[in-house]
Image (cartoon, rainbow, N blue to C red; front, side):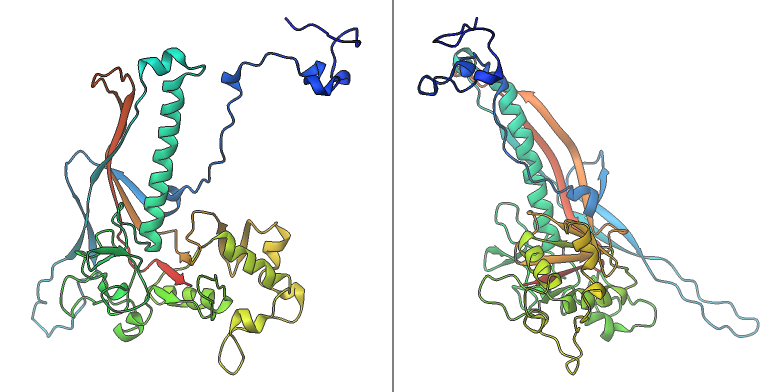
Length: 382
């Protein structure tokens, strides 16, 4: 029961909150159930599976093989009375490595007895958030080519997992054709082979472009801005070049994913607070982009009018998210999902009773993910 103390009499209202400040205030003398007053932390959400993955489940165990058709037949001229040669379909396969991941929650009987909170419920909720963070980080690393030893993403060179670079060496995108060093797959890298040029190629001729043109449309490129070490560059010419490279393979770019650091640079460009020649590294003679002199004709104008977080740039839906690597941005055709997410067993929660008073639970799941369509993404690396 709450009672009034001191010279203030009458009904306790918000008007006398703060009275007797040195004693905590009359209006503050209220008992609070702190079980309902736990402050949660902010959660950065990026629904990567909805954006990037063709999700599928399977009852078969172990690694999963996904099969894709290839252009393999062609019409041929035949002489009078002759029959054409028999042709057959050609396929390629992508193997997705499925592994098990889990969290053990150590809640003891004494924790439950002595705590003011529901320790098991709190631990399970945090474990579920940890699963969300893990899957987001894993998918982002796979899509953006970020090296991680625990997740085994990126390029394996010299016994170390490193981030995929624009180079054609063993540490760069040129090694993606060999999945012994990049089991999570990747986009089109420099030096990639096409069907008919030997090896188990992931790439085929498209329309009338020719292999030379298609091979030059590799997906990992350094940005055109001369950055200081660790700085984030952003150039409109990088965006337009990525759209062009993707169109050579028959893809239409739909989304641009950038980090908050990229977004700041974009706003400065749109607001005319930085010199365009420094940000764009462009000039008419060099064939680069030239910013329109009229503010209303700026390609970033629509982003400013919508607050910047959601907008359109060159027809691309711009997504700004803290999960995007600070020194990388991605341009994708998300009408065709670039990644396969295979779930062998969904997240399950089981009791763990190993003794020693532990009454908590553990949760685990079996899944795998891999970039299986190598031509629908472009990664610009600072």
